[in-house]
Structure formats: structure tokens, C-alpha cells
Amino acid sequence: MPPDSPAPSPAAPARPGLPRRALLRVAPLGLALALPALRRPRAEVEARLALLHLNDFHARHEGQQPSGAACAPGRDCLGGSARLATALAEARAEAAAAGRAVLQLDAGDQFTGSLYHTAHGGLAEAAVQRATGCEAMALGNHEFDHGPEGLLRYAGAVDFPLLSANLDTRRMPALAARIRPSALFERGGARIGVIGLTTETTPRASSPGPDLAFTDAQEAAARQAAVLRAQGAGTILVLSHLGLASDLALAAAVPGLDLIVGGHSHTLLADGLPGAEGPHPLLADGPDRAVRIVQAGSYGRWLGRLSLDLAADGRVLAHGGAVRPVTAALAEDAAVAALLAGFAAPLAALRASPAGPGAPGLTPEGCRGGECALGNLVADAMLAAEPEAEIALTNGGGLRAGLPEGMISRGAVLEALPFGNTLAFLVLRGADLRAALEIGLSRAGSGGAFPQVAGMALRIRPQAPVGERVAAVTIGGRPLEPERAYRLVTNDFLRRGGDGYLPFRDRALMARDNGLPMDEAVARHLAAGGAARAARAATEGRIRAE
Image 1 (cartoon, rainbow, N blue to C red):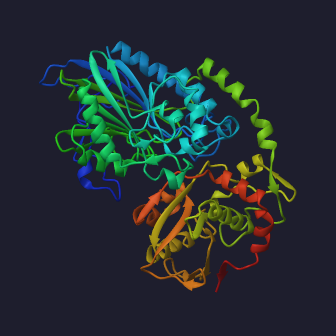
Image 2 (cartoon, rainbow, N blue to C red):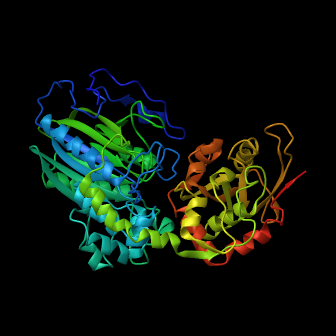
Image 3 (cartoon, rainbow, N blue to C red):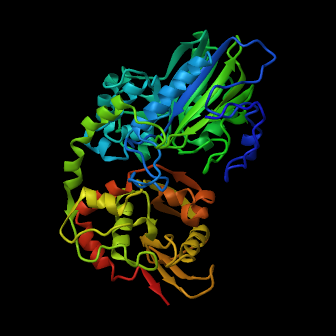
């Protein structure tokens, strides 16, 4: 890896929808993951720390192509637990060579996203985390996908603290004994307080049950910061599963915070890497100090390392380090590979297990240029899986294989939906929804953006100029109203602006990302007989050309 450079980082462009003030300053020091050569601060350095950070792994133990599809021979591949283990081991060795103590943290959402999790309910993730040295994790919303009982089973399998300061467990004593609001670590002479926070939308996005409550995250952070200071913590770090926008608000509102290691929004904060939405770290102004914010994308495709020089009072004097892509160039760690092989053994049977009965005509042919039965099936499944939504929209290009006419296996569903996308919920004005539909129709036939829908009907003019192809939209039998707010479920790729759907990224009145995996939603819908309904619905004319 290249050596650190003391040159200042270039300013990164502001992320759309986020306040420009969040990018007031960027890292003035070294950028590479290797041995950090930090600028000498004016105050004396008391402790030197290397912070290794991950978030939103979502059980992606086998890695994936940059497109999101499963790894395949001869294709570029990112992530995978065995390669990630090697990256972590190398980062620890480099930190030790530089005289830096290490603290390894996870910002949550280990659960949900692959058959490893479906088969083992979090135990595969727990085993890999133990093997790779995780030292603390914030609870993400998906850690509640199997209810409190599933979380309790996972908590019993890990040997590090699970943190959530804004989770009220008083009505569940067994879980209260396992979940802590914060933890205090001593590293290299420094005392570092780590506060966990979980998104307050968890009851809508997961299944925590009626006995758990999620309180105000900012109030919880302020309260725990005071507790940790009283315990002698000099540096206060928030391990946040709130999302970048909420992390920026937290940094601005709560005094005394030095660092935020974020998750939930799957944001890549990195210098010079494709797809990065800001620098590593992103610096924001807090009430009494600069707050450094980091987040390492998702799915274990990147490993973050933030090198810190700390003063005697715990304040951050200087920083360096960078985010490293976890590529196929890294050798797989033999021990972790063997561990995963044991968990992989039952997956072939799970892939072969039936999801539900099929029906004729469930192919991706025509889905990039018009209504299709497979598109109707997937959109209906999305709508059924998100009870708050009134309409659904997915992209025809995301449908990559047909479903058989007989019994459909889970493996066949994964082949049809190979990108590992999850459901995303948003609220959007009618005018912005119409603009998004125009974007999807602008690429009919030649790209993958064509909208497959549920809960709405479209009349389109395929030959009209781009921007004039939506003739009419009806929702619930009523014409689209430009100022009305509509509740939409889509996939996370489109919600991030993929396929050109920028209104979903930039114009949402509210959004809730990282819901149920799409393949899981479709499997549930198939079990309820959705395939036969989709085949019939292909002739109902949700999308009609004039």
C-alpha cells in the first residue's frame, strides 16, 4: 500500500441533501491505510490509536461483484469474510509497527442479507466476529429482525459488548443483562468511551416487539457522554447506527463528542475511491470541538482505519489513515475460510428448498420496455412486504432470470434477483414521482431503468420526447396530485439514485432504507400464491402505451 502523505486532502463535494457546513474541513493529514505519518501537533501527543471500523455487513460472507451480484470466477470481487479477516490482520500488524494501539468497532447490521443468516440466524456472523477480533458493536435495526429472542441468541454467542444507549430494555431483563449503553476502553494510555446508538425507526423497519422502546438518540448520547466523562473517559466516540444525516445532526447538537463511527446509510466516506460521498474522515463543527465522522460503505467491501494522535485530555490532535477496498488481491484467511465452510454446508439444501408454486410467463423478457408478469410479481411482493406503502416501483433491469412454471426454489429466486437489494421506503410528492417515472421511461428498451409498478397505473407515450412520455398516472383510481405526498416502496439501488432515479435520492420528504431483502420478500409472496396472481396481472394493463 502507498505510504501516507502529509499533504492536505482535496475538499470533497457536498452530498446532495446534506448541509454544506458538514464538509467545512477535510483531513489535513495522511490518507493511506498503511503506516500513518501524521503531522506533528503543537500539543504533546499522549496516546496513538488505530481505529478499525466496519458497518452494515449484512451477512455477506462470500463477497460480491461491484454490481452487487454474487462473486463469480473471472469477475472482480469485493469483500468476503475470509479476505476481510486478512485485511484486518494486516491493519493490526501495520498499526503495531507504527506504535499504535488498536480498537476494532462495528456500527451494526450484521444481520439479514444472505442465506448464511437465513440458515443460522446470526450464529455465523457471531463466529466470524469472534474470529476476527471485534471489540464492540452498536445494535442496528436488523439485529431485531428475529425479535428479541433472536437478538438474545446472538448476544449469547458473542464475546464483546453490544451497545445501544437509546434502547429501553427495562421490560426485558434477559436482554437488559446483555445490552449496554456504553463501554470504556483503555488503549495505549488513553481512556476511550464508546456510546452505542440505534435508529429510532427500528420499530417500523424491524421486529423488536412491544416490550422494547427506542428513545431519543441525541438525549441518550448526551447522557452517556456525561457518564463516561465521570468515569474518566478522555475521548468520547459514538458508535452510531443512525445514518449519515442523523450523525451530522448529532455532531452539531451534542457537546463533548470527538468521533462518530457511523452505519445504517451504507455511506462510503473515503478519499479517492469510486462511489465515495465524502472524505475520510468527514469533519463537522460540534458545539465545542470538531467532530470526525467515518463510515465504510457496506457488506464488508471496505475496511476503515482512522489513525489518531490524542492529547493528555483525550482531545484529537491529528488524524490519518484511510479506507481500504477489500479486493480479490487479498488472500483468504485459512481459519476463517474453514469456519465459513462449516456454516456453508446446509446452504445447498436451503437453495433447493421450495419457495412457492410458479406460473407461466415469469421471464425477464420485455421487462426493460413494458409491463411484464415478473415485474408485476416483484412489485406486488414489495408492496405486500411494506405495509406503510401505497405504491411500489422497481427497475426492469434488476430482473435477471425467469422463474420456472413448477415449484420455484429459493435458489431460483436468488438467480432472478442476484444483486442483494433490499427494500427502501420513502415519501415523495406527486410531482417528484412523475419526474422519476419520466427518468425511468427515458431509457425504455436500452437500459434497465424501466419502471415495474404496483398500486399505480400508467399511460405512456413511448415515442414522445424524453421528459414528455408520462401521459397519465393514477393511484388508487385517482389521478396523481402534484402536491400530495405518496408513500412508496422501492429498492435500495433506486433509492440511492441508481439508474438515474435522482428524485428518490434528492427529493424524498422522508426515507427509511435497508429493509427486507428483495429475494426474501418475493419468496414470502410466492408462498402466498403470488406467482399465479402475477401471471394473471400481466394482462391487466398497469402500463399502457398510447
